[in-house]
Length: 141
Image 1 (cartoon, rainbow, N blue to C red):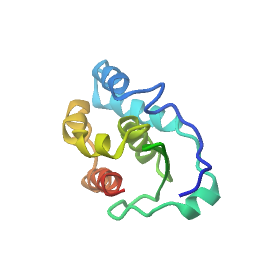
Image 2 (cartoon, rainbow, N blue to C red):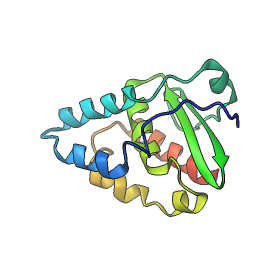
Image 3 (cartoon, one colour):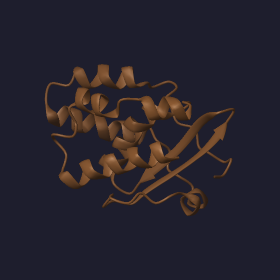
Image 4 (cartoon, rainbow, N blue to C red):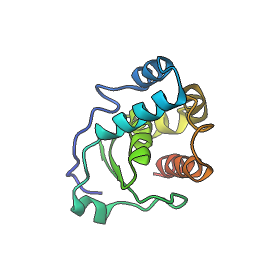
C-alpha cells in the first residue's frame, strides 16, 4: 500500500476506551446513532488516488475504501465510505486497530467491543455483515 496516509484521531487521540465511555453516556439509540455519525465526520475524506489503491471489502453494500501501511511492525490505516453511518463504524473500528501490531489486531476481541457499544443490535443486518467483513479484512492483512 501507499505511504501517503491521511491522519485521523482514531487509535491515537480517540481510543476504544474513549468511544466506550462516550457511548455509555448516550441515553438512547438515536443518541448513539448521532455519535457514530459524528465519529465518521472526524475521519478525513480519502484522496481519490488512495481509493484506487484500496482493497475492496466484500459483504459491504456501501462503498468502503481501506488502505494501510506498516511501519516498524505497526499498522496505520486510512478508511472511507460513501455512507455516513458506515464511515462512523469505520472510525470506531480504526480506534481498535490504529498503531497496533498484527498480533494485537488478531487478539483484539472485536465481538466484546461491539457488544459493549451495543451497536449491532440496532443497525441493519447488511451493515452488521459489513462491519464483520471489515474486521475480517483487517485480520487477514
